[in-house]
Length: 149
Image (tube, rainbow, N blue to C red; front, side, top):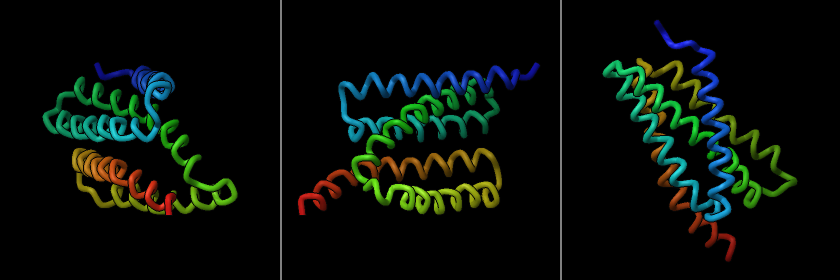
């Protein structure tokens, strides 16, 4: 018997809401800038784990990996919202967010059309998240330097 898709979706939404609650709790202790790397690390690790579990055909492990990914998604959105509100000026916010979505949608389209398998797509997305996590560690010092000038 396969998994009931309503149950899977409900678990995803529960983890996403739980991630939002975790961010709220953790942001009382640490700043969003300090939380971003661990959130991204959980995200890329869970995508790599999902890719590996799918390749060896272990569906319970795939589900657990995706639940961890959804938890990180639930933490990621409030974290980046807090960070973007500090960096992006109010007057240009809509334009900048719209321009930001163009390359993101291009990447999504490229993965959907150009990657030969689902496990390769998960691994590629995990690799991109890994690069973004490294960038998130390096960027705050450059941003602080630019704001000081």
